[in-house]
Image (cartoon, rainbow, N blue to C red):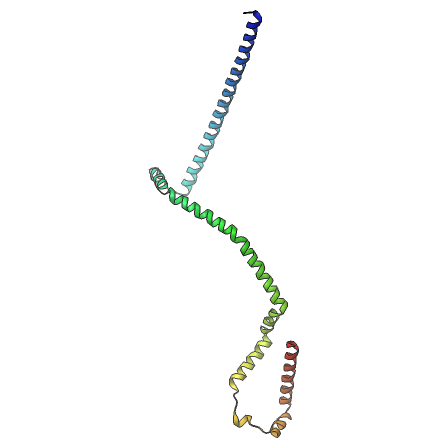
Amino acid sequence: MSENNIQEQISALNRKMDLILESIEQQKRNREEFDDLVADLSIVAKDAFHHTVVMLDKSQVDFDHSGIPMLLIKLLQNIDTFYEMLEMVESAKDFMKDLSPILHQMGLDAVNKMNEFDQKGYFDIIRNLTRPDVIAALGNASKALAEVKMDDKLDNKSIFGLIKQLNSPDVRKSLSYTLRLVQAMRVEKG
């Protein structure tokens, strides 16, 4: 072998050795990072455990360690039930997602219908019916309709008897008011 060939082989071996040393160095860094992570996680776990113990102690919870295996056994025995429960929760979530636009549209339709009723004046009628003077008048009219009945002796009057009653100011006033009321109803209706 020539000296050149030997030098090339030595250079190739040096390159391979450098790669091996770099790989070993990288593994060493990874191991140190992992050890640091484990050390940090153990500190966090210890703090979490200590905090949990303090919280349980403040809450006066008596924790029986022997119950943990039974809890795990029950959990594993009912894993299918938990899976079904999660499926139902997901289904309910999907149902609510599908139902939301429908409920939104129903709300908009209700608002539009109320606006339409307001434009037609239905709410004005209701507001007028709740005024105290209108309620009193309706109460008086209802009472009069219940108490005053058709009577052949009292209501069978001649034309001259009716004209004689028209001379009374109360009768004229009531008749005039009734005529104005009927005319106002015709105007509103037409």
